Length: 263
Ligand SMILES: Nc1nc2c(c(=O)[nH]1)N[C@H]1C(S)=C(S)[C@@H](COP(=O)(O)O)O[C@H]1N2
Ligand SMILES: [Mo]
Image 1 (cartoon, rainbow, N blue to C red):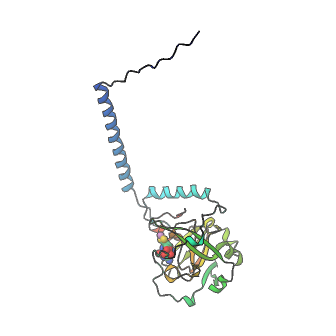
Image 2: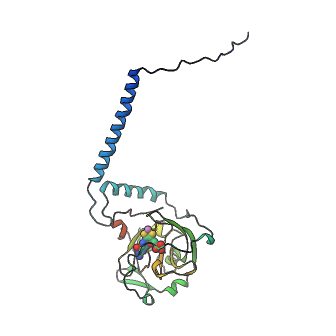
């Protein structure tokens, strides 16, 4: 027996009654009002919420700071010292390197008298000169430098890998602590870094930019290049380095920004 041929059957178009249309409009409009209300009151609740007391972090609304800290925990668990930031060929590095802000660079400064000061213990400061740093293995990096203000630029830096520096000066014990703190000679700008980021293989104490000594406004004689972080953590003109198990002071965290500021 032959199968009956399936004829195309026209479905009658579904007609909506006036009443149904009214009901749907009511639901749509009602949802719109409800969502707008939730957005407005949610925003107002956040806006009028308490500001955190100023400690190591400051100025952020409490719920936002909680979110930033939770975010940090999440990403620190994912962080790996083996995962490298993307690098580029040297030819792609910017010739006109962007200069951003200069907190801590405005005080009169004698570059010839500069030494890097590492606090090994209270009252035990190790002084390292630029020549001593230059005698260590040199590491170059060309990467995309990112500022939280919204710009980025491929830049070429060179200096001593922080891990090489730690190994050479036998700071391994100190590097088992949780944080590193760095500050400018006048202490006007300072950053706190989690140890995993500081000991990342692409973190360098940089004394060269585009194969020349770091210019004054970019942090001469030595600045931090830490590609796993936003620009704010890339401290220009390092003077002091400290190690600790608590968060070191951080200029922008005190002004409301994320303490971690990872990429
Ligand atoms: N001492 C010091 N370091 C600093 C800053 C600063 O104001 N003072 N600004 C930070 C910010 S926000 C950025 S984006 C980079 C900019 O570095 P550049 O001027 O070499 O581009 O430096 C960082 N390091
Ligand atoms: Mo920045």
